[in-house]
Image (cartoon, rainbow, N blue to C red; front, top):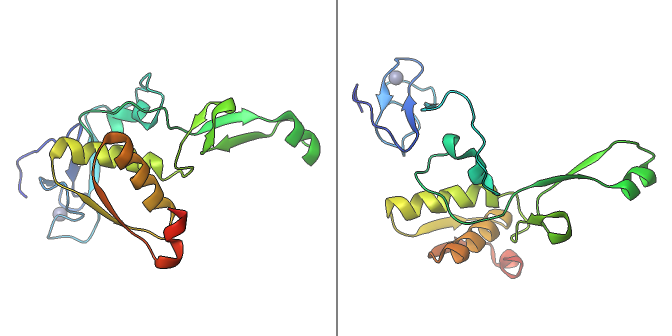
Amino acid sequence: MGTQVLLMGSYRLRCLQCGRFVNDPYRLRCGDHTGLLRPEYATRSLDIKKAKSVFKFYDWLPISSTADSNAAPVVFRNERLNKELGLKDMWVAFTGYYPERGAFVRSCSFKEMESLPTMVRIRDKRKGTIVVASAGNTGRAFAQTSNDLGMNSVIIVPERSADRI
Ligand SMILES: [Zn+2]
């Protein structure tokens, strides 16, 4: 911690109370104040990339590389559902596996939007094996992403949830 600015990929962390930058990417506070640190990104406006996954938001993710993935939410209009509900222009936002609609989130959980950049960050920083405690969705997403990227992970789940992973 101090006045030196450490860039962690495309952002740096600043304490809003004292204005100092914090060089440790694993800290939440500056040490002297209770407020959470705020990331300041190298780019002020969001430039959407052509990626098919969460990596389209690369500029605002704490990563320095990406992975090949087409896991992303999709939005579509379903005529039958609109008719059934008596609506004219309802759209569905869907995160899951529905190839006919272009949805390829194989864990079927929105948590895969978290696990992808997290595992890429771990891969790039070579910080070892992630340990995830989860009752379901988070563990499933990290297991899927770990497998997709050929990385190890330890997923801890309650015994009653183990068959869902
Ligand atoms: Zn501070």
